Structures are given as C-alpha cells and as structure tokens.
Image (cartoon, rainbow, N blue to C red; front, top):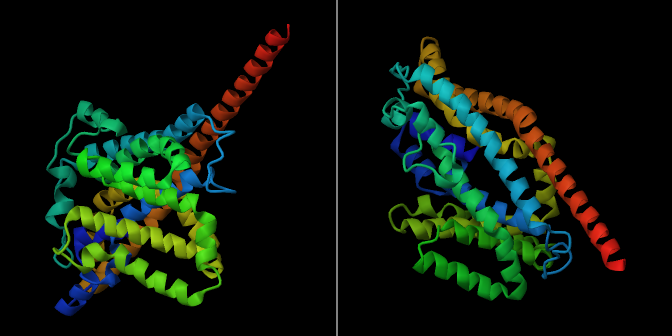
Length: 369
C-alpha cells in the first residue's frame, strides 16, 4: 500500500497546499505512509524471514530433515511467476487499448510526465511484451509492469536462500561476511543483505523474543530507532548514497520486525482480519496497482474535476478510489490466480514426496532381498 501511495504521489503530487506541508510529508519520518523504497526493503527482509523461519522453529541450527530442494524451487516459482505472467497479459491488453490515446488530464490535478510517459512514450510489439515475461532476465526498460524489477530480485535471491540456510548452520558470522563481500566486491544486488537480515532474524527468533518481550521501554526505543532507520533515505535526502539508504531502510525493517516479534500487543493489532486479508492479497495488489493508476485513475479524475472544485478534495477522492479499486482487483486476483497456483504447488509437492517415499520403500526391499 505504501508503494501504491508513492506511485500515486509521483503521478499526481502530495495532498498539500503549502511548502511546509510538502516538506513535512517529503523530508521527515512522516513520509512513511508513501515511502515505497523503504517498503521494498521491508518486502525483501520479510521474505528472507518468512522463507527461513520454517527451518529454525526450535533452535538456531536449521532442521532440514524434511526439506526437499526441488519442492522448494517448484513452490517458489509457482507462487511468483504464473500470477505475474497472467497480470502481464492483462496489462498488455490494457496497454494496447490505451497507448494510442493520450492520458486523460484536468487542470486541478494533472498527471505528471512520469505517469503520462510510462506506457505512452514506450511503444511495444508483442515480442517485446513476451520478453517481459521472463522474470529472471527482464529487459533494462520494463514497461508493462514497471515495478516488476523487485520481483526479479525476489525470485533469484529466494531460490538461493537454501544455500544461505546451510551456511548459517555452519556460522552466522561467515554467512554475513560472505554476503558483504559479494555485495561490495562482486557487485551482487544490495538486496542480498536484506535477505540476510531476514534469515538472521529467523535463526535468532527465540533470542529476539527474550530480548524484547515484557520490556515496554526497550520496545519503544527500538520502535523509534526502527522508524528512523526505515525512513532514513527520505529524512536525509542527498546526504546518503543510494546503497547506504537501502542498507539503512533494510536495518530499519529488521528492527521493526524485531519489535513486532517481541510485542504481543502489536501482534494482536496486526492480526485484525482486515489487515491479515490485505497481507494475503498484497502480491496481487503490488502487481495490479500500476494498471489502475494508468488506466482508470486519470479517467476518474477527469470526470470528478467537473464536480470537485479544490485540488485537495480531488486528490483524496482519487487516492481513495485508486486504493479501493486496486484492493478489489487484488482480492479477485488472489482468489482466482494466486490460490489455484498455490494449490498446484502443494499438489506437486505431495506427489514428489509420495514418489520419493515409494522409491525408498522399493530400494529398501531390493536391498533386503
């Protein structure tokens, strides 16, 4: 939702009428509600945590007894790739309908050059559209789903995560050293460190709970530190290099997750049904929201400009509309795209495990004979 809000702000500006308001919402921790870059950091840290946690349930040493690498690869690919390809197809159809006409505009809240040029200034043929379907090798310019660059890193790094778990079993310090060396000297993606943060948080989950639980003062201090680091890229604009900004927001994401892990109150709040559902559909929301901002939001703003006479009212109605429509479409996509492919992944996993069991039983009989 923060990524959607950032793209809406880049497309139509901030809900401000004065310079002070713009400064507060842009260059301070108040930026957090539309800090899409920090949200990307949270996305990678959370991914590393969730994918690793199953292996560190009872100790800091991973339990890999029932882990099957092939099953993990199949599940991960089916979880990310097919929904992406289907949304890409929907975006291609919408692109072909809209690209020949300029983006609708109005005087109160005109679209920026950025949103106006995302599709309209980049003509594509069907071969180029097909090229964008290969997540592990996306073109330098991604047109149909421009935010998909993060998914390319997500898929590649998540497929390497089992190797990180194995190294962590030998030594967490060595794993951290390897990751830093890969990023600094071998030009590995900076987001490798974010996956590292998530993996280490999973490995030391129990220690984090003991450190933070039942200590409100410590929770508050870490929450403040986490927010400051999470938003550091925009609180200190131009003062930090891009890599340092990513590392700062990644560390902030890890600290915020540590606070949640150690706070039953925050866990109860985040367990509200509506928040849990938004979490479930967040992948579809991430995939679909740009199509809404390009294809539907400008049309609505042009229509509403006839009835709303202030920029601020038009901004809020447009933002609420974009969010509501995106969430609705994400719910539909989750129900009819994500769930079937998750079920397919479970079926493939069950078939694979059953087949392995039968092969083991057969081999055992042969040996006994």
